[in-house]
Image 1 (cartoon, one colour):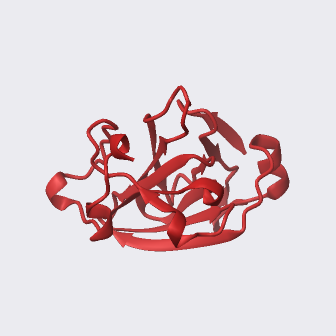
Image 2 (cartoon, one colour):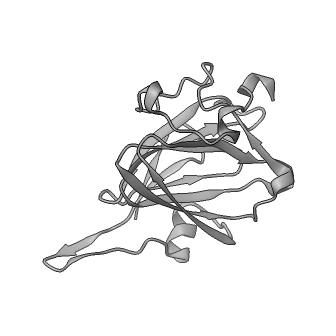
Image 3 (cartoon, helix red, strand yellow):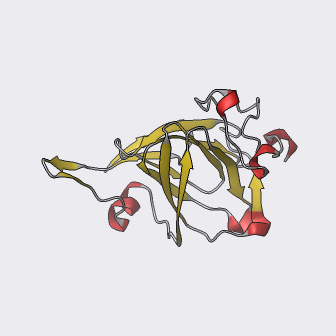
Length: 178
């Protein structure tokens, strides 16, 4: 596995070794031993999967306090622009973001340590998105930031009139308001 650092400390792009031949391909999507060597010890306790169509933007979500979550995300089918926003108080990159295109073809994964807000936009007709979390979801600890916060300035690579949001994701506060 190749580890690629980003502009935010702890946010890492993981590129697995993919073995292809005439039958197709094989790769290890997760190997605890290799992951710990590359990233450190993280005890994942929950796996999630979502399916979305073109233009869907999910996020920017996070869990607060003791319920904060580290995540390892990947796309099984399609293409998404995956985004991590640093919301760690005192971090030199507070309010900055990293955006990485994850696809079913490039097999890249993004690791987000605790203290990140997370979201993605679907760039393909359809996308199947999977992620591991190191803490269980707690509804009362849920937090979110407006997907279009101008202070963060994310280019979701979707025309604004094509963006599809849930009712909840269309009403989040800006980072400066939380």
